[in-house]
Length: 189
Image (cartoon, rainbow, N blue to C red):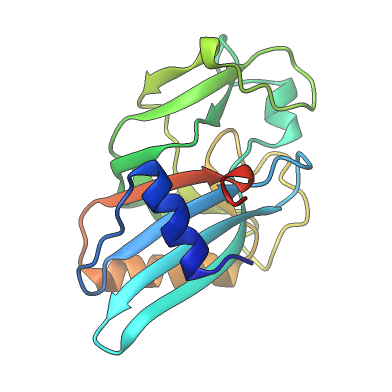
């Protein structure tokens, strides 16, 4: 679990700024590279309201599952999002027939093409573009225990109820395009 103070400290170090507008959902991913194929990363949602700051954390994956690492969709390798700040990355849309946050801005990804269960984040493979990197759910009924085929590079919720809560917050916010900050666990020293 992270604190608001820790987030502010990392943002100052990186030169990032939180949106201070009421109701804007600041979406911050924190990658934990300890284990692949697990929902061991965190999505932090920070929202300023007239009643104060709302802070929530959700288990997600910011990594592709082992299935896609071993069977990449692209010939140049599986997409792994590069930690960075992405302005106007997502908008409300449809992912596989249900409401989700879908890519509407450019994002940087590493390409892992050696078909093993290890995340290879080689800066020489990085590229920027539109790759369909969305924010969506895994299991449509409850929750998933392993990433497997749920992510080919997308940012994916472990629990359906968490996903539904974030989509509801995003919908009610009235925001048209959402920024995304992807951090690494090592940023929190």
